Length: 434
Image 1 (cartoon, helix red, strand yellow):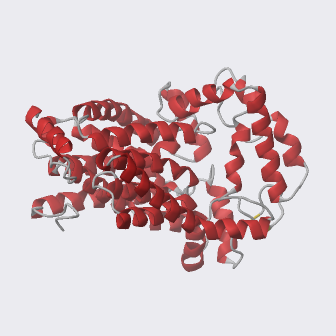
Image 2 (cartoon, helix red, strand yellow; image 1 turned 45 degrees about the vertical axis):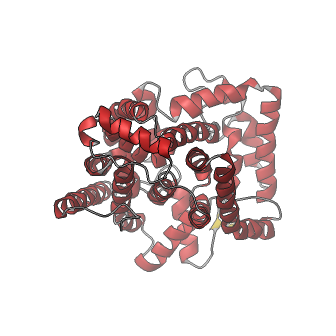
Image 3 (tube, rainbow, N blue to C red; image 1 turned 180 degrees about the vertical axis):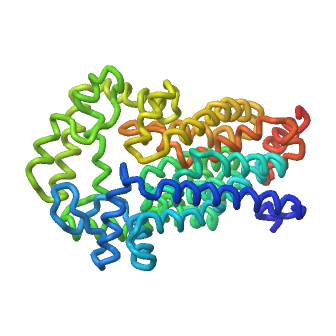
């Protein structure tokens, strides 16, 4: 228990943590029940479709994009498998899966508490847990048919295991397996590697940190490899995880580049792509054609990458834009407009707090460099498509860092369990300032 940071917890603390979990679960259940008649939107219809096929015994089939049923790799496999197995057991109704996902809400709250406690102590941990429990931008995904319902707690578990303690071969291998599973759920989670690498290099030095990062990458690749081999056999070509890897076509085109209101915002069917969608072709040909269109546009307009990074990797990902522009996304994704507005209001306050917390604990190098690396890597990964939703795995970290900015909550902050003197000095200095 001591190694996990779970020692010395009073009964009152357990009660408060359990209460936050119950409240968050109740919010998700109420959200699902109140919106049970709302039509599926965004990615949810595809997950529903693939889930129905799986429940009928046709694993990873779809009718997308031409209306012809076939085995495919349109989506990463883990979440359709989750939906399909749930449909097979509970019946093919999205609301039942959403209610099932409500039971996973405590995992996100509990992992937030655990990571915050290991970084900043018990008061900050309880505060972060309650913020995440009440924050619609976190719990709302559990009430929707979206992969974020599973990806957020998995990503948080990876960070909790990776950015606090020094790396070891066993830890790096275990995190690699978790990362591989997360990539099969949400391929964009690849940005987590940057945070792990930065934290490990900060606490263990360049050589050992890079070596342990390599172990994690190798194990993650081994987890993903069987699916990649399956794709080569079924599709007849190399598709690492999903056809959605070719989604850059929706951002790198003239329609997106010249949009005066939403520049470089992703769109499903820009004018230069319509011939690809109108004439049926194999999945692998479809995949390569979309990739070629994006690459050709970038080769002709190299500066478009920098512009897309600004608009998607910065402005949309971190909502450095008018709130009204962020709220436009809710209709397409099936989120609640009002709850998202409340969540954005909380986010702007917490973002300022997170920046203050990062500055306050800047001597804790693994926190500082992991946060910077995660921010930069996420911006790069989401250059081709972004929005409030894509920040979901990082929202709990924002709440944790914001709580770390409050001296009253961090007076008992523990020294990092690294054994490195400079990191301990940073923690002591931060506590003294408190």
